[in-house]
Length: 191
Length: 101
Image (cartoon, rainbow over all chains, first blue to last red; front, side, top):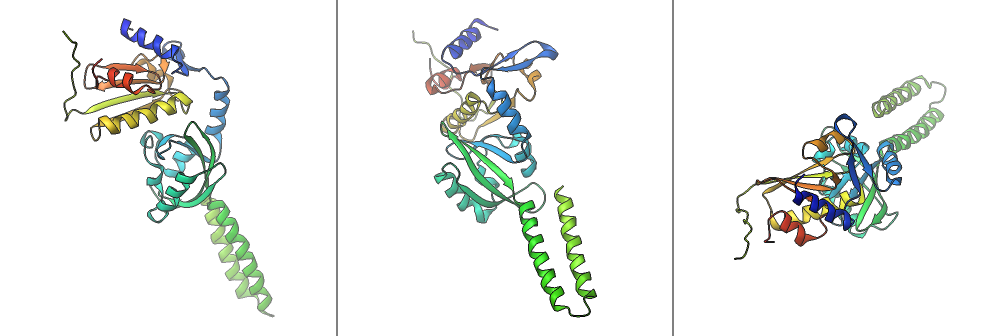
């Protein structure tokens, strides 16, 4: 480390502009965070089943957890600084822009997001917090919920069909079972 | 005699690397401040590579990173490092040699 670098380090520490240090050497190198509680927070964010995104006031992504990267189908490296809006399907961009501009704690929006592969993904975005102009947004995959809604609708429809099938319900039952099997396959695809 | 700072040529490509610690408050602030600064002063000719040292602490070795966040100017040469959240725009511009000291 040069004298200039050491001076820069001293200045940044004195000004309270750093919140982590790299300690150890070679294979034992690790990051020591000044705020100990952040470790547990981060662990929670990384393990949760919902996507989580931190964005600045302009809606640019500053951080995203592993689950959000999975939903989008892109690594975090490709997400940094990109506008969150750019992941929404074209029709939903104005809706997302309004949400980001007016978001208050607890506000929500349901939109479709583009993925690297496959059809758009229906998600619900909820504003979890705003601290120092940075918004924490939770992103919930709505596919399981939509599947559940369709299952309820299907069961109601089957019941109605059977009630009208009279003394020969076999064909109605076969049709209903085929629909149930299709839903089961969708559910398996969701994991 | 007044000291002069080399001004970047308008076509020069800037390669910046920001070392962060996940979404720690200072890391988020540094990336936000850096993007704003680059959009204003280096529009269309910069790239930012973010390296999360919480995910891979060994990468700190490459640029001998001690504190986080740290910004490294890879190009144009010479390599320069700025430690901190880049909240002081003037100091960051001086550190990047985008403004005379």
